[in-house]
Structure formats: C-alpha cells, structure tokens
Length: 316
Image 1: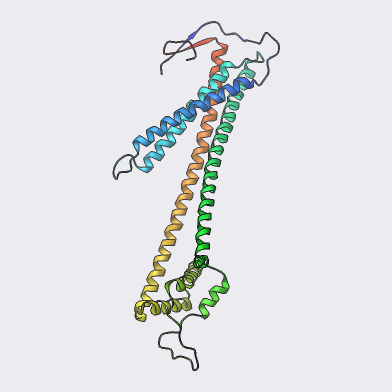
Image 2 (image 1 turned 135 degrees about the vertical axis):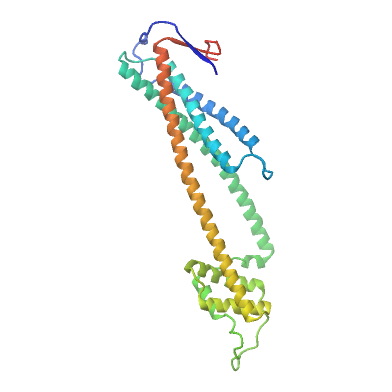
C-alpha cells in the first residue's frame, strides 16, 4: 500500500475550545479497539483461506504440518501488529490532547494505544469464549443423546448392564483366588466337578485387572503371570510354553503401547508450552504496535500531517 504524507500546517497544540478535555477519551479508544478487532478478523479469515489452499489431504501434496504451523504463527504475529497498529493510529489521531506538555502528550497517547490493545483483547476473548461455549453446549447435547440411547439399549438388554468393569482391590484379590490350578496339578479329593469352560467375556475382567496392576507397578507379578498362562491354556488349549510366550509378548506389547502414549502426551505438552509462549509473545507485539501506532497518529495530529492512501486524503 503506497502511503504519502504532506504537512498541512505548522505544529501546534490543539485544546478543546468547549471546556477541559478528558484525560481518557473512551470514544477514541473504543473506535480504535473495534477497528483493530475488525481488521484482525478480516486478515485471519483471509489467512485461513490461504492455509486451506496450501494444505492437502493427498499424500506428498501441499505443505507439511510443521510448515503450516510456522507460517500460521508468523502470519498471526503480522496480523496482530497490523491490526493493533492501525487501531492505535486511529485512536491517536482522533484523541484531543488535554495538556500542552509534550511529555504528557507522548505518555497519554501511548496509554490510549495500550487501552486499545487491552479492550481489543477483551473483545477477542469474549468472542472466543462464546464460540467455545457454543461448542461445549453442542457436545453436551450430543453426549446426552448418546447416553440416553445407550441407557435405552441397556434397558432392553440386561446383559449390557453388566459390561462395566470393576477395578476394586477386592475383585483383584478374588481373581487370584479363583485362578485355575497349575497345569498337571492333581484334583483335590471331593472337589466338585469342573463347570463349563470360561468364555472370553468371563476372562476379560480378570485379565484387564492384572494388566492394569502390572502397568502401574512396572512389572508383571509371577503369580499374575501364572494365572494368565492358565487362563490362556484353558481358553485356547495350547501348550504351556506357547501360552507363556503369548502372555510375555502381550505384556511387552502393552508396555510399548503405554510408552508410546506417554511419549505422545509429552510431545503434546511441549507443543502446548511452545504455543502458549508464542501466543504471549504475539500479544505483546500487538501491545507494542498499538502504543507505537497511537503515538504516530498523535504526532500526525499535532503536526497537522495529512496522510494520503493511494493519492487520496480521505479516510478510505
């Protein structure tokens, strides 16, 4: 955008002729904040379109995720600087000085730019919160609908109501007590006849509790390992050596999967940390731009400098 400036008159201090001028002129501040918010929305919408045009769902097409993240961060910083700089300039240009002291002029002009930034952040926060509230309301309604459908399904099928897995220590102890006898052990005298073979649903609860306890402690207890081996042997009919190998492999894979989840959570934490610091730095850049813009607008106002955009001295 080509900008030319021309000095229309000699520098002079302008004081309101109709009485004392307020130190804080909220009309100019509100105008600048609304202008900064509108400009940022326009630029962010335009940037979203550019980002969607650069991304692609096809493999090896479009920009990578890291490149888009870096470009988005830079674009957001430029948007904040441009929007708050323009809003601050409008406020500084519209504000009437309440004193003729140059030092007070500079401080109060910068303070009005800071007020533009603060009010713009509040407006943006309110807009963001309203959007999040709408999303949460939709999610709650969807969850309630799903829960109601699930409850109706459970009522029509009582067996589904028993699907909830208990993780109490008592159930864990009962699992150990009711574990099948080791392979090759002689049946006790007068013992009742063995019941039907346990199903997969019968074994899912005890096995889940064993794996949960082992992951929490960091190792598979020998008694739990023996119990799991017996369950696998009874369920599949495979030899003890193969059952032991299957249990060990399953536990190793489970630990590896848990470690991957921990690594993913740690990566998400680091990404969130970087994003938070980047957002704070971007907001501070916006604050500096608003203060500088307000000072520049006040300087042009005091010097009666006419700013021409593409050769026009009008606001647009």
